[in-house]
Amino acid sequence: PILIYPGQSITLQVVVSGQGVIGASPTMLMYKGTADDSSNVLANSMSVSGRTITLKTITALAGGSEYIGYIFFTDAGKNTARYFEVICPKLGVY
Image (cartoon, rainbow, N blue to C red; front, top):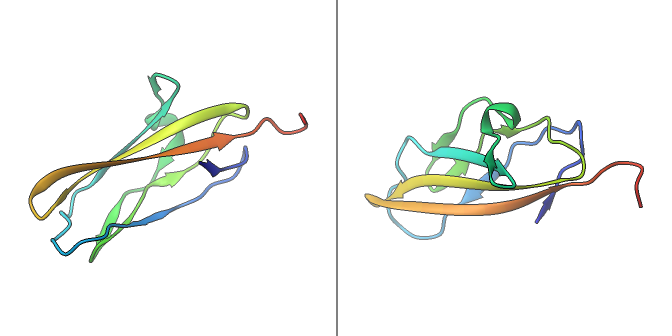
């Protein structure tokens, strides 16, 4: 899992192994539990350079929450998906 603190904003990159061409229009979603929270926690746009995908900026996460991010793209013309986990700890609680 990736640890992101409340109030922190972060932009990540994903390097996809292989040799095909990554499509120019990837998409990304962020779920908090089973609810799509993308409109609240994702900003900016995604981009592709070679086999590296720069994700949307992750921001405004709720402390004490866990998220799952999904990335959808085409790799050599095949629909592909990846996911990652994000933990946003509640500050001041140990």
